[in-house]
Amino acid sequence: MDSIKVYLEKNKERFLAELRELLKIPSISADPAYKSDMLKTAEAVKENLLDAGCDLAEVCNTPGHPVVYAEKIIDKTLPTVLVYGHYDVQPPDPLDLWDSPPFEPVIKETKIHPEGAIFARGACDDKGQMFMHVKALEYMTQNDELPCNVKFMIEGEEEVGSEHLEWFIKEYKDRLTNDVILISDTGMIAKDVPSITTGLRGLSYLEVEVTGANRDLHSGLYGGAVANPLNVLSKMIASLTDENNHITIPGFYDKVENLSDEERKKMAEAPFDLEEYKEKLDIDDVYGEKGYSTLERGSIRPTLDVNGMWGGYIGEGAKTVLPSKAFAKISMRLVPDQDWKEITELFKKHFESIAPKGVRVEVKPHHGGYPYVTPIDTIGYLAASKAYEETFGKTPIPQRSGGSIPIVSLFEKELKSKIILMGFGLDTDAIHSPNENFGVWNYLKGIETIPWFYKYFTEMSRNN
Ligand code: BES
Ligand code: MN
Ligand code: MN
Image (tube, rainbow, N blue to C red; front, side):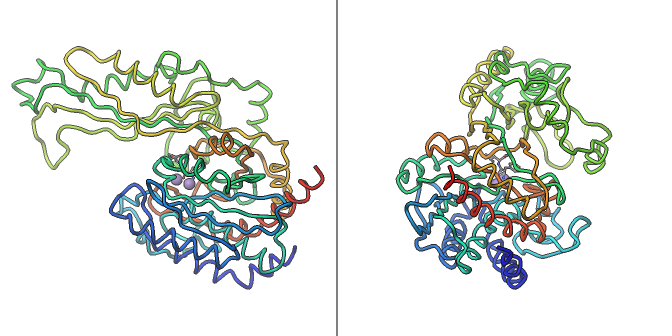
């Protein structure tokens, strides 16, 4: 299959141009103003899948944004790979921090990408990574190298919690049967240190509202005599972690899986440079739960973070006001075997119980998802590992990630197969941030590696 290299060399300009076209459409799932762009993107993905050789591709309506489903079935007795990805992106703001407009993709050289990186919202997360699979399929069908069946399920609501994908999976269950689910929506350690993601954290996302008096008050006339919801909310949030940065919600850690010393030792072997980490973020020290390393804090331990907090006067200059309401958005990243629905309930109960007299508290759950961990002794993992060996010349390191793809654990539950997370992103890609980018090298390396996965997975399934 060395011809993949030749094919890439010949077609890479077109592969980049086609991705740029997709990146131009602002498929922002969170903002209803972009509903028609969501549809336009779904149509474009469908067309690309047909061009790549699928014999069926559909834009499937859901109660939310549509899902693109496509397939190429060459022989029902052969294994089937189901590719999952998402065509929606995060909102691009703050816009003024972008060096070039988020939906006008450009290729620029960077320190770690002398070959260039493509700058646009969604370049890595996940249009770029999803599109690697489309182009890998094109290579396989054009060169008679597709060894098995393939199905695609590309959704448009990942960045807002995959609210309707559960409905879709149940509705389309018969068509989604597969032997392995393949996803490129995560990262790897470094260009010369390939890794396979073996775990994702779960999530509980909610909003809290603290109400004091029935109207904003003069902070001179009432200050000191009536509860200030922003003061109260700050105190309540501060009390959710103790001096060791442990979370104080009763029962929060009850189901947290404790890794053995041996597993932790193995984790610590992964290359990680704390000094470099701090330098890149321009911080003088890291911060987190006592007793755990930075790598552990960011992957195998649960967290509680305020994502936004507001209320009162935030305009120009000063206004003396005692706000009537205060708000915060809070996320908790969860690890096996925490149940996000249980954790959401525990949070709600606790938060309500610590509210002082004089305010009312409301907790509004948004969305969530279960954590996921995948074993490394399955055919899927071994096939992926061999694929990286072919194209990187190194065995990839299994590594648990701190991010979440909330729907992944549901795939295993509903579709009864293992999920393989072959991510090609890097820390420097700035996903969800201004100037998101994806290395041209990473994009092409992904396209080169994926066909090897198909080959080994099919071979290993046959011998099993
Ligand atoms: N692709 C990311 C998740 C990710 C990135 C996992 C890098 C591992 C490494 C995904 O699109 C994402 O952003 N997920 C959200 C959750 C969602 C409910 C908004 C997240 O992790 O914040
Ligand atoms: Mn993603
Ligand atoms: Mn994302």
